[in-house]
Length: 412
Length: 96
Image 1 (tube, rainbow over the protein chains, first blue to last red):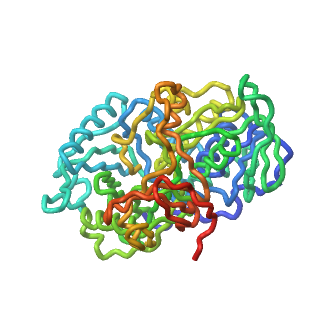
Image 2: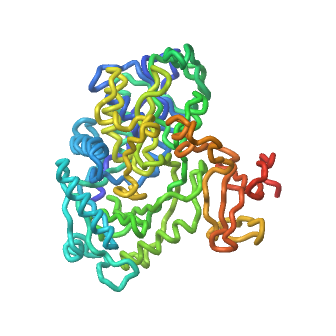
Image 3: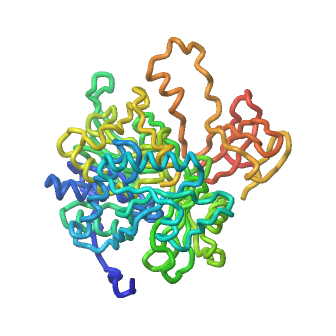
């Protein structure tokens, strides 16, 4: 890829409107999910009296901090359905947004390092195939053919025993994705309001008889009335839910990522390893982009501990000896909201006009268009979209968990 | 990397410790009387504050003993460490 393929940085892709007194739909959180929801409200349902409230700058939270991996090879039917729906939308997103997002379907290898890894991986490949998702199992030799810089010899601590491969997986330029959604939503009449922190809610009715509603949102830029509210605040959802006195089993953790200096193209695909805790791709500009698991303790500080990165680098160098002399350029952290079953929480709340979207943990970016589509459907029609219905908050009471811990591992 | 003060061993590197989640979550006194919803809250729901939080920590690569700590989830600073079973100390800022 040459630099001529990169679009010029545009001056203005959206306006900076003053908040109006009320909107039909108020979306809290101007990240990928909030912007995508706004876009599909306009595009699919013709609902344009919409505000997206962002406490910082647009798409400056996890949307600016993720490692941009997009895939749909999840084990369980519920997860496969929404992530595959999302992946199909990614495949047409550039035309839909009329904006380049550099979506590159370079495939993902999920490595297996133990016999149990191999069994789980083959099981996941077969489950994927039954769900119509492209997946195959590759032995170490085929893995090496796809990614020649990967060390598949058996003299490392956890030798590569094979990998699952999803050819349609890929990466995209996260900022362009956010800008594309924001531009489209703005063109459609949505107000994108930055520097607008939600401080509380005006409510009416009673939760006991099901008449509770949110009538307005208290923000750092004044009160804003609302017909409906969508919570899309990722790692900061718990503070919003606290204001609404709604409990959700969320834990916010720092998730770190890092990039190397710019290098010649050496890495043709995406490699993930849950067992040794690292995932690597090479961005269009040439940085190696790496991430690991979350920091163990809860944190809202958008930074993590150095020893987590140190271990991640040890795993990366073991798997990719060629990286040994690459320099780390910078590292950062986002705040991800993790749930007990590693699946998102999307759906209704005790307030009839408030929909909840959180708990995507370390895997929210790939679901951006799919979630936006389904959440917009839910807001517009009042009916839960079938792809998000399994992810309701009450599954922790009914026991109908969507346990993706073993399937997707900690790395997304 | 920060230092965490083990009540028995003194200040040691963060790497030696294991984070054990929210402190002061008691086993239900009458488990057979709990509704599904109450069980769900006991098993899955933990607090997630932005600010001071009482947590369990284990000095897993040292004396292997558990203790409680009050830690700020924004600055990550430990505000106090105290024995399991003791009440949560009334501290909102780091002393040093």
